[in-house]
Length: 275
Image (cartoon, rainbow, N blue to C red; front, top):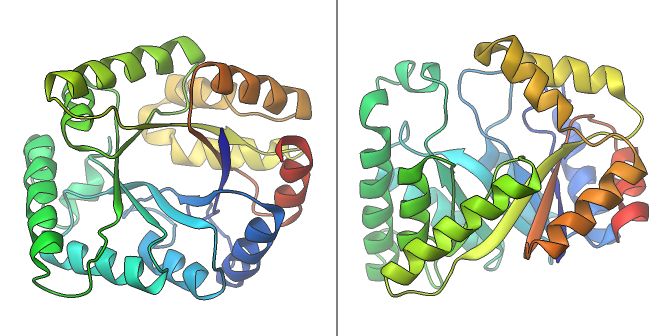
């Protein structure tokens, strides 16, 4: 099982100067990918731009949007941006897409929240056509397409369309349930099962940062959402080792650990535990 680390793109107050050394140190440590969490109406950095900066200073580590909220974006431009990043990185992009769960990301750009699932499906079809026919730029090979989500429609879409599927930061029985459903939909579509990716939040020795960042990111969901998310953050080496063992046993191909503390030392401390 590969181990990936998140970039602190969605941690409010993170200095922009942190991303280049973060990418370089994560690659040197041996992590498989750099993951990002995307939002629009939030104190965060645009993930494709950050990953382009990371691509310029690395050569091996993969670059993954885990996930980018696609329906509020213009499809052709998104396809061109992804193709450009795929080219700049020499084929290291995993384009993870989802529909999100916050309506304000849609409202601010005038996108239709009520049809977000249908919109994403049309976007995927359009982007595949653009990449295959090379309509707008370098697209050979196209990026790996990863889909997330837990709703039945999202699981069906992932089984039918995705190269990879990422389960959210849930307990192991839940991710196994989602994986099995995705694989079942893939069989029905007569295609290979998507690569299975999993995720969890972590921050070693920085509970204040966890409380601050989880509280702010999930506040729109209310106290229960904050409590549920906070409960699943890994804080100790023992927590991380346990989850790594569980996800490996569950058949995860890649575990992405999203950081909740924007300190470079988190990379080294995590690497000592999992690599």
